[in-house]
Image (cartoon, rainbow, N blue to C red; front, side, top):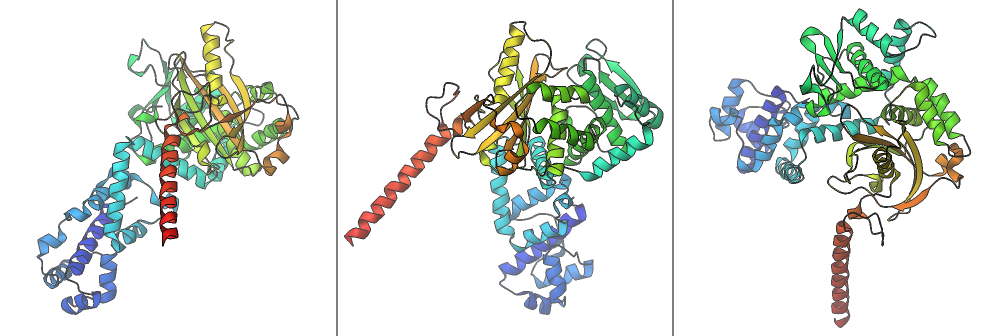
Length: 500
């Protein structure tokens, strides 16, 4: 996290460097004029040191300016984007240390080439404004990067959850929502109450609200037992991991800083560990993957056994696949759909593979051939025809991306997502099909497993005569036009060379 003192050092160093370069003098010359050593001047310009008042005064005189101008936080027009970045709450909240970056590292980059960095920041800012990228989306992207760095497996949280269970749950005692509620009340002094549309209409679409001043947790009574377990487990996670800067409501839209989002993720991960231990998940997953025939009921039985939601189960599957089975070429996506509407929102995603074909572009239309969307259409049809039996659906599909020929096994779980009315959600796990996956999964060659050719989005898919296409392949057409122009230019140059 960039501190105010770091920002002060950097701006002062940038101004000294800029004034020195405008006068065309070296560090040695400035050292001779001011009596400040070259090494200390270098640390000043790198944003590592801020001199005392008497040295600021001699530097101002040596640079032909006055004391007040040199110590002010104002930068000229060329460096305005840098100043805006340094004042940005996004940068202030971003924990650089998670990525192994110290604030001084960033300061040094800025100090070494402020004009180029300024142009880069201006470009990023304009792009974010043009595409409407807000702080929540930026924090989400940062969180996904952190997850990818760890292959979505966090051993410290796994260990904390295992220690908590060993200390608070008797051997063979069932871990359920009633037990977690009791622990919250007795161990952490919580007051737990439920609410509905009548008692708290302003919270009707929220799963939970935490009143920190009263250590009170309000839980929407429309939640399923699985959702209630997760909500209680996450609250325990906040307490055990001692994370106090946290969102007070269940919606990520209320998150105001990256620290809150990261803490929310860690507490959620902790809840998943309470529900499904990595050892149990590894055992269940091994049996499921070794089957020689695809069987959707097998995965549904595992989900029922652990009393998990589709998202909780798929998250734990991804945790264990990377850590215990060394399968890390995968992606995890969630789509939300209001029954009857042809709009699908990609509300959550994680990509451990760098394959751009699996990425979901903002404001584009995800491939309707994908099982992730087809299962939502299936649920909506059953609901409209009153044939849905209120049980989650499990579907699988082998997809071949049209542009590259790469193949993925997609496994999807879908169900309604209370308390939001008429909202259905699917959670899909995509696994790159390579020799390692073929050796692990027994049902990959099952002829009953559906297969289809897909694109990442309609806009980026060149597949002809696609009945499911929603919009034209705009991006593909643009690339074809660019390529055609390049070929014409190359041909023109070739003819000119031959004439010479």
